[in-house]
Image (cartoon, rainbow, N blue to C red):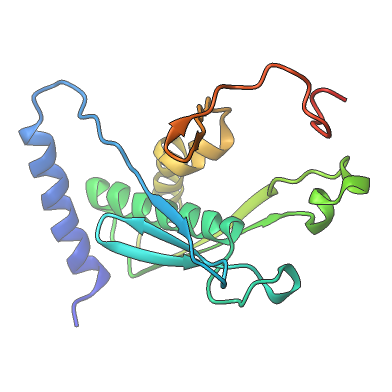
Length: 190
């Protein structure tokens, strides 16, 4: 079995080849996923490229606990992005790594969807992580890696900075116009 250091050499080669092949113009990519709800189980099947992930609720929310919930998946996505960027940055800086792992968490209030608790934040908040690195590099070198990772990690920065999200709605294959009238129970209109 190869070591993380051997993989970093491979990663460094890929990074340098990628940079050498760039034309100078930004390369636009479009991460995308399709999610559908399965019949009686209510599980959400997430399809990304040729991969599938199941998302489910706990039994307390009529789920079958067949997969992580959306907030848990988001914490996993953040952890995956952080650790991937550690690999990229360390490979590029030629910093040796022997092991990398991260714990990611957030607080979320389960009662936020209950009307009498509408003052409770419904979104995961107070997100945090602990990144653990084993390396023969100095603390200063690893601190430089961490600083660079926090600067460029797309998912960390997505969560840390306000975003614009646009959405459309279709009903039976036809676009549904945006409502402009007051919607009963809509916090924005009450």
